View 1 (tube, one colour):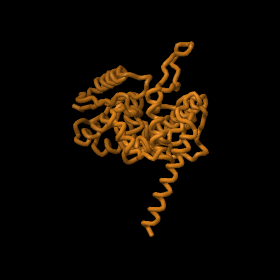
View 2 (spheres, rainbow, N blue to C red):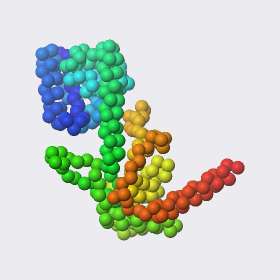
View 3 (cartoon, helix red, strand yellow):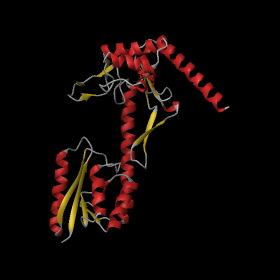
View 4 (cartoon, rainbow, N blue to C red):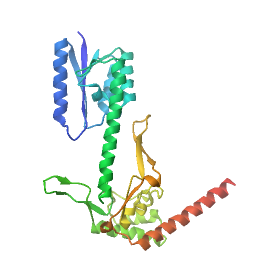
Length: 303
């Protein structure tokens, strides 16, 4: 008897665990009609199909190589992956192992499906990313957060007149704002990020993640705008699109790349100012002086 494995996945907020159950039920019905015996179900819950770094699909590929089943059944090709290169990789691995891929939407998958569906999946992801960025840009231009939060602020949770959640609003957290001012003052006075972090940890002051402080969290990277000392939100300036994120084809993980300053979106948000402009400039002056010193040392060492 032909043995079958089922793969099911969901990723968006519009789907839920029941989506996995529905996919498995429909795939089992298909296997039963074909006379296949289902020996295992592989699932990935709330994980994007844009990457192969998913435990369920990795185990599926591993067991396919071990020839534990004859056919893979899924609802559609894009459940296996939306990435053009990744779906081709899955197909090649399955072909090499002598395992067929059958979906409820496309039937038995072949090279034509891989080319067409892979392209459609890639276009879907690009369109989704473009729409998301447009929405975030509009939010930033309205003076709201483009995503995430910064130490020193609380997320405002409220509903609009229609009962829908209002997103992107922040307010100053007085206690955390005091810690931010203290760090800026200490650094401007000549204290190192290492010494600042050490003192905060000694006083058991919780950091952004709720744990301790590290020097890199404080000094960050001035060019990328990361770190407490480089966050322009503290002077009432919201800067968005400093960085873009792309997927590393080797690891499947996202890595950041700096965008040119001409592509940054900047909006004044004076209500969120924590640091006085003079203190900000004092910190920037010290950072610049230290950077110049390091550059001179590197040149001297090379000579």
